[in-house]
Image (cartoon, rainbow, N blue to C red; front, side, top):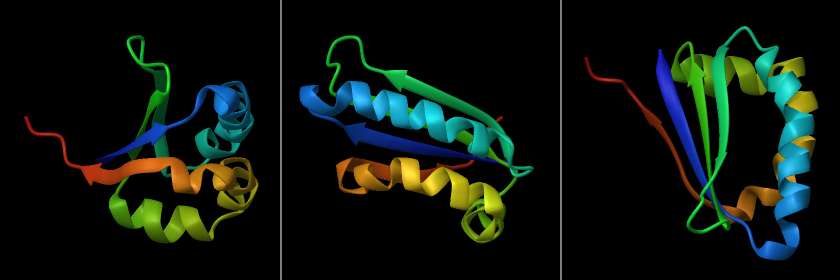
Length: 96
């Protein structure tokens, strides 16, 4: 198991669309056999900041299998407009 964290900065004018687009993308993500869980959070103190947490079966499953899947083809068009807004995208291994 591996956890991916994505951190976005989204300006005020695009926040509602960003939230809507991720809501539309989420079913494809969650239907992937490689996605174990998904969480979408907006910062209370600074609403321009968003954190996406995705628990994957493995980094390879995310980077190779999911990205080559039909689920990814359904997911990606919704989030593609926000790629330049990503401040961080990394995989983390939980420690006991």
